[in-house]
Image (cartoon, rainbow, N blue to C red; front, top):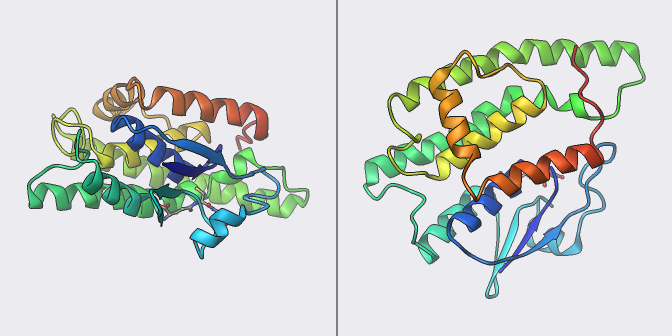
Amino acid sequence: MKLYSAPLSLFARKVEIALAEKGLAFERVMAPFTQSEGYRPKLPEVLAANPKGQVPVLEDAGLVLFDSTLIFEYLEDAYPTPPLYPAAPREKALCRLHELYADEIMLVPLRALMYRTGPRATDPERRARMREEGLRAEPLIADHYGEIERRLGDQDFLCGSAFSVADIAVFMMVLYSLRLAGPPIAGHPRLAAWYRRVAARPSVVPVVEEIAAADRALSFPVDEP
Ligand SMILES: N[C@@H](CCC(=O)N[C@@H](CS)C(=O)NCC(=O)O)C(=O)O
């Protein structure tokens, strides 16, 4: 199996966690990334596999897939043990919804914080606008923390007692919010306990360490307004 990933790609890192959870060995190819240029130059293999030119891309015995959610679904069908989705249709559908909530809803305000590890805008007006947008996004992110706190209830994980794709996706959003000086999670005790639980998993520890190392190598010091 071959995975095209990138040092600070939260979507590709989702797939790395799932592969490790399932005990699947894979060769990893890192796509170039800099804070100034983004994902440039694009790897020819990624461009050939994905019309969007995005990572992750997974190759498995001649099958080539892109999109982290679709890759999760394939991995679950092809390598069902250990499962990363609940078995019952209703719980499985809700779990997919939690993953989508992270990838498509939580991500929206998070994007407004991403300038904080990039090169400083030289135009003062542009820099002020980015800072304002970041500040406006923070309460929205905190609202999402509250929603996750509510969804967790008394459960260990988002979809019940077992770790799932939803935990992977939401964890990546919270990790990125924290590394971008987003709102703290301390005021949300269930979320904070869940975050520590997920961060301690053997599949997650190296990913968090590698992202921190990538920040040291590639990112600018966090521009806190
Ligand atoms: N929905 C896609 C999103 C993938 C995505 O946004 N990948 C980013 C890195 S995290 C990328 O490759 N961006 C480069 C670009 O859009 O040019 C997924 O779940 O895999």
